[in-house]
Image (cartoon, rainbow, N blue to C red; front, top):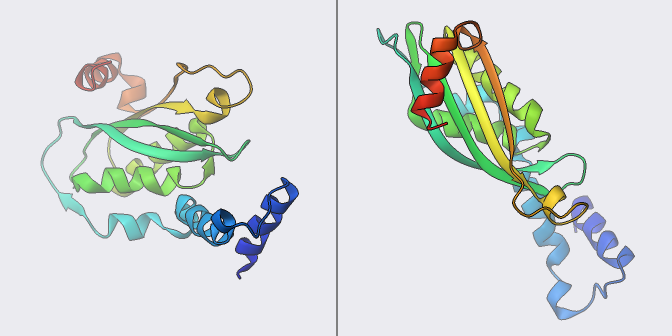
Length: 183
């Protein structure tokens, strides 16, 4: 039994469960494996997920990717938050392979996190990888820490945005991004 398995075993016992009952015999091992997957962003690098998929391009018009699904874990309660991420950027000689946007989102979502920081981390990563003239990132998510416990508000949605470069400086660019993603 790994150290993480043992810790989950201890948590179950502390909660008053019979850790020897049939349904829980392998739960510590499964929970440890699940948590390692859910937090795999700590062991995954930006370079690894981009994997050289940055290509020369003379396109200087906006590129937007809408509705990238993600799940993350709230660092305050260790409960999931689930949502969608929308990314727009203005290339400056280089474009990023489409699937890499989803992989970048996952690198930062698969950590204990707050949505505000995750939004900025995604924006910074897109800028770092592409050298773009500007980036906009909007994240909308439902937080289980607000839905399952505490105030228990089932229809609450949190939206965060980060606008950098021309997305921050130019209202028309920001408006174009918002129109493209349907906001």
